[in-house]
Length: 418
Image (cartoon, rainbow, N blue to C red; front, side):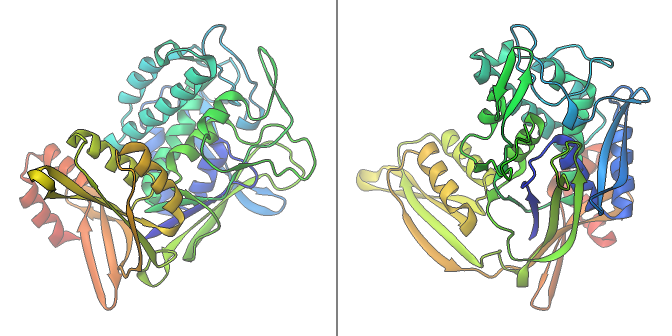
């Protein structure tokens, strides 16, 4: 399994996140990324990564150009409030370009118009959904009344788009981070000066591990709302660097002067010997007879999104012929506490059985392969003298629809080419 580790010791912003992920790409992947984001139809926006140096460390700075001009970098954006609406305290760009407020519906319409894969547009909408909820909670208003000012500009949307496209290209099976460094001191907003973390950042990072590692200096805000929501959305578990066979590492540079190299470090690799990082799997088993099928399906989605290796239901009959389900949840060591929390939060069970065992799996990673229908992602599984290659189902569905061909016939044709 491919693992991505993101070091949040210096905090995180949208441009640092994108710069770190970009640094991990191969040259052809970088060309694909730039072609995808610069031809997606976001008006006037051009993404220009810059190879730079932070205290002698090779790193990448992700510049967002709008109509040929770059606005204030992410680390220097001013916190603003939009009168009675959203907090908009992200270090967003100045008001000189496309700085009108947008509702969540307007942002979703803009995202829907982008020439990107459905997967990317869906992720962008989900990320803005998290931002809407955080802002609504900060101001005690319904989500429908949240109007993004700074966070609704083209450059802010571009920061989130960059992260989403880069994550798709890298294709990690698991994303791990250490605790989120919030910074310390104060942050200036239009309504005054607030202590770090500002309300929306705190709302986004609720139930996640945070810290204020600043070496005694007052550094201000190190984690912006854009950075916080990307961590919230993409990171599966928190802890030390997992055991893995390291494939690549790189740095994304920030703008804030913090007295040391202000970089976000990313490392990417594969689980060792085809096993999970800890080679240990936790199996939770419990029986449910008082939940609707739709509710159980929702619970399973939440568990999978938060690091569960698998969730499945086995139909059974209980006393007096009552139909029920035995629910089985598998998760790695690092996700145990979060998965237990979600089981009790999203299901009606008040107890479960836990089994701990070793597991053996083939090493898996995604690769891009060329076919007559276009580039397609394939899952490569190998180990113990065996190698298996399988095209990703979602992309088969897309190619089948685009070419008016049956998916079975398409799979057979593509399998011969990959």
